[in-house]
Length: 135
Image (cartoon, rainbow, N blue to C red; front, top):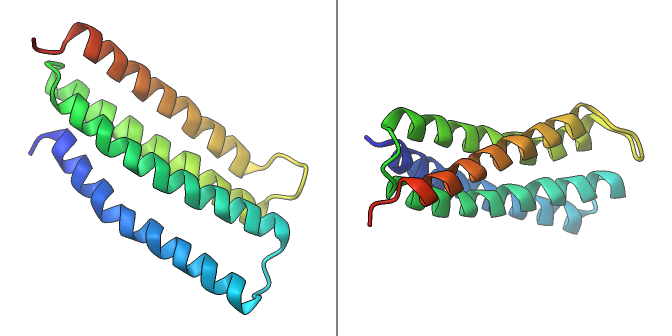
């Protein structure tokens, strides 16, 4: 199976988990469970980034699949994008759990690393679309 197709399937499977996360947050807020404002803020941020980036990934994989880039590079690009998504969104959840207001944490470093990986993946796709797209 080609990498863009496999990773699109993975993204489609992951999207309902993000939807469930939104439901879980809503239920916690309705019940007034013990999340601080700091925790709610970072839960929302992680949830929103995960959903938006997974939808972006579906577009990414569609475009990447149409390029003439070597299969090995397509696999690498898909892995970099997926790890970037997990790090970007996951960093917010790590910061929510282990961070403190106004102070950096492992979560903020993880989110930053995810942003760098996402930028690399997107710039690679731009390169692939400029130089290696049929037609």
